[in-house]
Length: 349
Image (cartoon, rainbow, N blue to C red):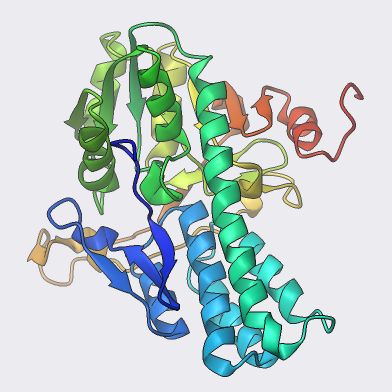
């Protein structure tokens, strides 16, 4: 096993098992999920997070429902409804659950075989994601110059997928080619997914990095200390507008202001071509307590008003390219993304 490899979500002894990201970086703890409610809780509380990872976890949750109910189709459909209610922005969640629903609704699959078939589907989703990550990594690494200094936001590594990652997969692939000089890691307020999780992954992989406050990104870019910005995505609209962790949009604005390419690495399962643009992407709003406190320590006066949207939308005009597992999309995204998704034959306009 390579040093950067781990498995965020797996199936062991008849139960889903997750690497509990709420305990990182101080404790590498694995949590066995005993029922569908625990899977939903793990997704909602960010014990497992990242658009592809929660899709994988949800698929395992659907399989768990089938095993616990003896293959009851309605139990699986109810589980899918519960899991779909956990987080509204990441389209991978709904994409994975749709695959599970389709099996539950297939009368050709007997009740005695449904659980095994759903588990097989969850394993397939996980394997497809890992293969997509590694292909994205190779395609993205080709875009980066030698001795590249990269700035990233949130965590789009193996913790957000299965083991390799999307944006950090590009970084890992580029590092294996000797192309990465340094990674600037935005701490990513309010839950510090950069400082806690991205730094943990880069440390584990032996990739040089420095953690910065989100507000320091402007100085890094203004001083010419970064050659590229790379982030992941939770949903990409048909025109290329991209939803990602709150704070991604200002990083894209800063990159454009300072002439630094801004790349998004996102698997095809993240595309939502049913949405014309980013204004239609649902934005999850989380508890204001995540802003008011950190680690159980209050950071504001008691009861201070706070607002906590979990994502923002980066307009397509600020994105240099979108890296997928089947190719790199460039503007105009309204043409290139459907082509990559197989909606438009190659070479047509």
